[in-house]
Length: 404
Image 1 (cartoon, rainbow, N blue to C red):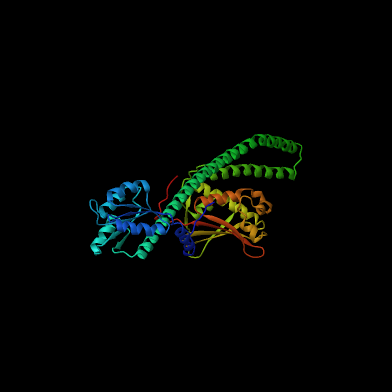
Image 2: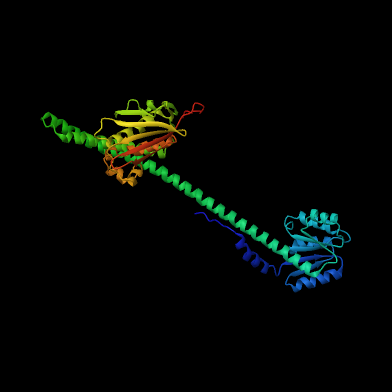
């Protein structure tokens, strides 16, 4: 699961208010070489609940700040020795103090003086003689901003930790999924292989039995039923193995371009491939052997829904860069919902329909078409007719076709 944190303007108000309440007890350093100024500011700020300590020189302020870690510094500009600008620059050179808010106090109110203060790293500039109410408001504002910055930093660190934990969990989950896919593939391959050994024994015995029946002149429908069942179970094992290879194995199909009628040529089901008027035979990309296998599976499926017809009618055309192939179904009995789920692996409708003898062949066809960027679906048209619609990307002459 993914946790999403959002903060609206409406939410920001109570958070700001909460942080403002917590600025009491904040540590404030006052640096001024005039004792009278120190006394006034220290008394005023202490009455507001702040923890205040005073320094009379820049050198002393730098040493004390490294230990006390103030959250805000009121810094006089004109001091003997190291002035306020140089003191601020020295403070900002310390990685642990560079984020401390510095407000300059000075009788110099020229624009150049203020610019020097901001260039040195200050966040505000109060001109002497200062108004106590102004100092209080500015101190409160910058402490609140500092608290918000600290909260945001803690929040970001928390998010980074959470993201790192979730990333680690997803990596473990991905590894588990890949391991399960590998185990599934190995299991299906093993089952497919292991089933063939006892099955071959059963089939050989069946062949011998029907061979003896023929010798004794016993020819009936049982042998035809046996033959069809044999073919069906062998095809089921082959399709199961093939689906597993498509899902798990790294197949490298030989991709090239082919005319659509090349794919339909030589199929086991009689087909009438009709093109839309004025449309040339389109080309598609893929592995010709796989495409022929998929089309053959669909034609056999369509034949199940056209038992009274001698051939399957197929209409083809090109639209918006897609080759659309429609297989007519004249004896359609599925509901719209069952038709939409027909090509799913676990489709109950397919397993109980007139196409049940096709087993997993429709699913195999769907997987192959998806391998080459296509999709397939079945739908109802009216009371007794339906269609299978296949869509594949049309091959363009300026498209590079790679070989796997």
